[in-house]
Image 1 (cartoon, rainbow, N blue to C red):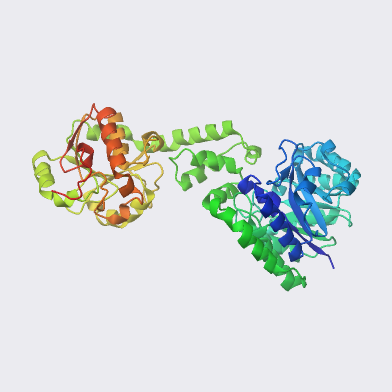
Image 2 (image 1 turned 135 degrees about the horizontal axis):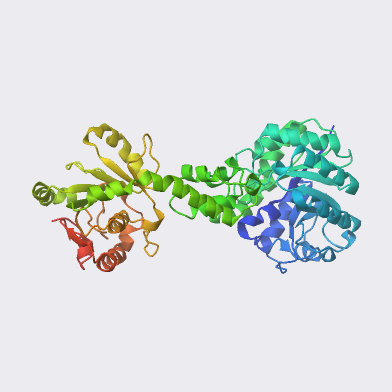
Length: 542
């Protein structure tokens, strides 16, 4: 029966979370807890000659550095390994294995440099190390390329060859397909490994699939404490160990793993959490590099579904997993031109609003307390009414300006109930319609105020839009400004958590913006507003 070796890579892969700065005490403690747990192989970090030695970090310029960090440890596991990203550590930075703390070296490489990387592996092996050939992004290999790789591997005869699901794209069936090719073509004495990522919540499931598959090779299974690792994280070591104890009668001690998680790992999780989330799902679902997702999130004007659409349009296919900023920019710009701009029909909206009396209505409490003033204005002026992110109970509106997804969710039931009133929706591009398309969609990013604490103040966003339309006069009701004492909205659920502490500063800022950037628009406040008054102590309505 095949042997299963459990490899922990918390100190290496987990280091992406904290730039490998675990602190010397944590480096020692995690290592010793893993030894006590009976983990077969412990990976202590990266070997990278571009980084200087730092006793608090698990990224080291040479093999000699490992002894300087862990020389005080009382005991070792069966094997200690480091990792080299091929091209980042010259062979001269590696001492002979017999002269340092490290027993083995894992070399990661992409398929287009497999030949050079395996030649490097052969040089490392000559120094006495157990060498692991780590196949970055196993899903990028065709069957023919993987078979060609196995021929190079067999020539070098490393300790192990490992499949790395770099972007978390594998399903169990896909994993078995790659595994069977390696199992069939790799020499029997070479072990086969697997390193999972959790973008599809499948890291643990895939690892179980890998362990349960009948194989002629011994296997190496990667995991990290609590799944610690960049982006969606890895397969949790403590879960893997528990499963192998139950299924394969191994004797890993789970308690020291739990102690290491509590003592050392959770502090890093609290500061920079990892795990399954929308960001990494989008990356995995579109089989693209996470930097594409990061680029699109940075635009601040796209909903997740729009980001998903754009990711699906990245071309050529081979560039998806090799991030190219120029391709990201081009794909984004094409999408905006073809979709958001085409949906807007803004010329029609401009025509509808031009030369009309406009009343903007916000969700402030003074819409209720000073209702009579508003009614007199509406009866006399017959304005076109645009409300912002809410539906006034006592006034029939013509348009609603929607800038926030959660506000739209609150509105939808009521909007559909009163469709006979023909309220038209002007939505910013980060909000997605639930049924039919919005009447008007406007690009959100240009409307944001990067200088403000609240960059997406909906009142200022609407004013900026109307200014772009050439509107010269508006009346306003329900824009009470921010109070340091009372709730600021008729619906307290609309309150930002920090508003009351920042009230004076926010009122002052918006007042200054209105007087400078919107001085060409005559803004008439029908109801009381802190934006027009210096006294911020006001806490009620007239």
